[in-house]
Amino acid sequence: MKSFISRIGYGVAGALVNATLALMILGDGVATAETIQILALGDSLTAGYGLERRDSFPVQLERALIEADTDAVVSNGGVSGDTSAGGRARLTWVLAEKPHVAIVELGANDGLRGLDPATTFANLDAIVARLLEAGVAVLLTGMQAPPNLGRDYGRAFAALYPRLATKHGVVLYPFFLEGVATIPALNQDDAIHPNADGVAVIVKRIVPYVRKVMPPGG
Image 1 (tube, rainbow, N blue to C red):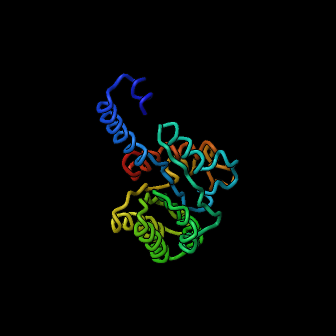
Image 2 (image 1 turned 30 degrees about the vertical axis):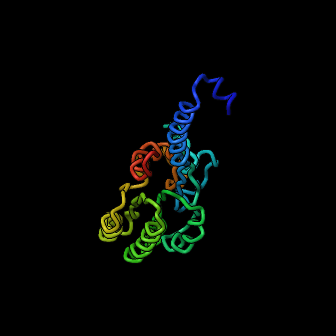
Image 3 (image 1 turned 135 degrees about the vertical axis):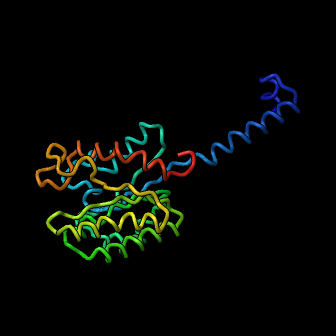
């Protein structure tokens, strides 16, 4: 300690005061600086169906956040073909990663199968409630049903997402495929799943919403 104090040219008292102040300042920074863990809970749109891993939604989102100077890790909780019921069933397992933020992208397969919107609502309601109880900030992403199921079904299905967001007071990204759906150049040959460029569009649009739900300092 003596050699250290003499080297920096302070008296003992001055050195201790400055060292204490430095520890207080730096200590607070270390304590609060934490990598933000983001869970992308979804179906094939999250899982990256038909894409290289580097082009999937979680990887592209993580890359975009890091490029924006946000220390974040995005885990891929997507399962191709999953319904809202499937997401609900595996929620305990994915919560083991202790995320700070969860992006809930579920319901597309419910709509494709023509499932009762009330059932989809109940499943998503349970998912969002459980995440909030666990202290996880939620970004809910909306989905639309295929037009062949009729206008009444489409309206009821689309309406369940704003209802959930209002009920739980969470941020809603109105339509996960906004700016991508029905645009051939941004989708794979099946016209359902976005290609790498389509995912890039989704990420660019959704990043501001993700930042809204991040903890302070994120």
